[in-house]
Length: 60
Image (cartoon, rainbow, N blue to C red; front, side, top):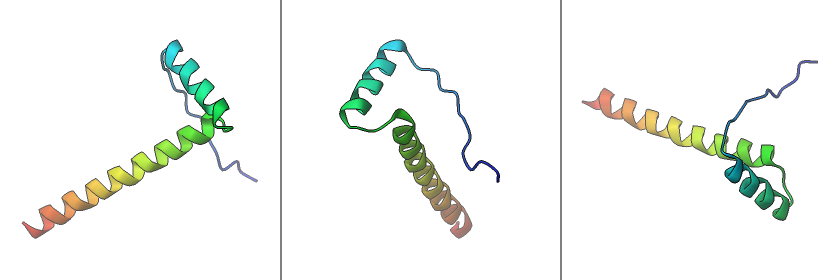
């Protein structure tokens, strides 16, 4: 069966990575889960913006 997940390479500063990893440990979650949630939220926001722009341009 095909794998339903893929890998994304992310480059961030060392200090930010340390902060992020530390906060994930404190929250008892992993970095991948947090990033997946953040990316999903960002995608939802962008899709809403695009839909609103299309709606405005169609009504003009």
